[in-house]
Every structure is written in structure tokens, then in C-alpha cells.
Amino acid sequence: MKTISKISAIMLTGALLFTACGNKEQKGNEAMNENASNEKIKVVEVEGRKNFSDQAVITPLPAIMIATWDKDNNPDVMMAAWGGQCGPKHITFQLSAHKTTENIRLKKAFTISFATKDDIAQSDYFGIVSANEVPDKVAKAGFTITKSPNVDAPIINEYKLTLECKCVTFDEDDRGGARVVGEIVNMSADESILDEDGKIDLGKLQPVIFDSAKREYRVVGEKVGNAWGAGKSIINSEVK
Image 1 (cartoon, rainbow, N blue to C red):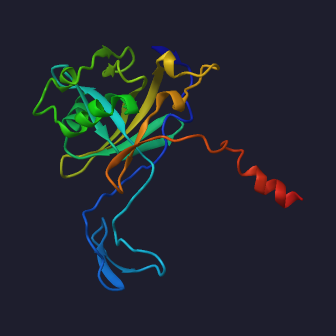
Image 2 (cartoon, one colour; image 1 turned 180 degrees about the vertical axis):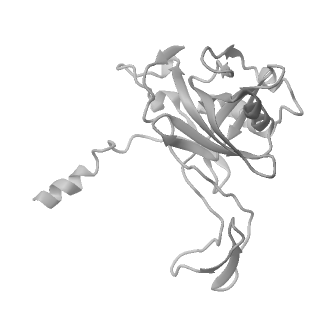
Image 3 (cartoon, rainbow, N blue to C red; image 1 turned 60 degrees about the horizontal axis):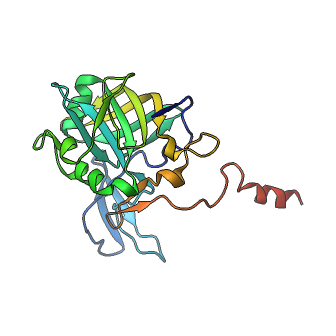
């Protein structure tokens, strides 16, 4: 794998928090909902739209693959959707009580990769099977590992883009979960997903996002404009 010297601005996008609620219909024009602080909120429907009360669809949600070692240095990988980039070289995600949560608490390190179109079956498997029940689930999926040279965590060889991260914040809740912030120490990529200028090409990587509205995976789509460029057409029209 070829090491990229700078953290790519496109390494991932999207949501820092995500709430997925069940199929709950809102009845009447007003509903009483309870927020995270247990404060009662009177919700008024927005006219002219279908209202879903406190159900939330935040998009895009990255399908991030978190790889860690356990106390015996067995590799583990899980898929998470409640995460995103929170600074030039930081990533954050929210975990409930998982084997991965225990491992990060212990090792203070992890690697991040991204589910892609070509490995969706294995990636989904990592999300629905716990290492507490299947300790060798990485091998069962047919995946292999390399020890990260920079942090105390495994690199999953079959994932073509990997961020090596050290844990800088681990805020635990009272249910065994935690909100994690990691500092990206290094990013490495397989040359097959680089463009001719040596930059990450998402068209070649074909990462997927989690569609929380329909519980589906969708491939990141086509280019539709240039960042810090598409909006200039409006600026230019105002000048005229």
C-alpha cells in the first residue's frame, strides 16, 4: 500500500450524529416528543409536508469500518454509520456497548476504512456479527490483516483506503458506549484507487453510504460540481 503524505479532504463526508427510530406515526397536528435531555418538546407539524415527528434521516452516512485488536491481539472489525470527519485530521463516531468499544478503551487506537461496492457482503457481515460471538470473524470473511506500523491496531488488507488513528477522546456513557474522537496519524491507499496525479479517486474506490430511510447501501455517485467553484456562477451573475 502506498502512503499518502497529506490527509485528503475527501476522505469522508457526512454526519456526526444519526438517530434511527422505529415506524412511529405522528397523530394529529401536534405531538409531544422527548429529547435527549428529557425535556418535553411540543412539535408542530410543518404545513405542506409529510411530518415524521422525531424520526431522522441524516445523509450521507458513511459506512465506516473500524478495526481494532482485543486484549489477546485478535483482530476485530465492525461497521458503524454514526460518524464523520470533525476537523482537518480528526474523526468522531458514537458507539454503543460493542467489542470494538472495549478494544478502543484498551488499546487507545484503531484504523478506519470504508465499505465499498466490491466488499459489501463482507462489510455488512462485520456489522451484524459480533466478535464476542465469533472471535475469528475477520478470517471467516476471508479477509487478512497487517499490523499498523503507526498505531496499535490492525490494517485490513482488502480495504483499499485506511486511516490509522490514535484515540484522543473517549467519552463514556452509563450504558457501556462511548463517543470517540481519533487523530489521524497516517492515511494509506492502494495504488489502484489513485488518479494520475496520485490523489484518491472515489470513482475508483466506489465507497458506499448507508441509506437510513430504506436501510440500503448506495454507491457514492457521479461528480456533479467542483467544491469552492460551483457557487461562483451565482457570484459572477451578481457582479453583472
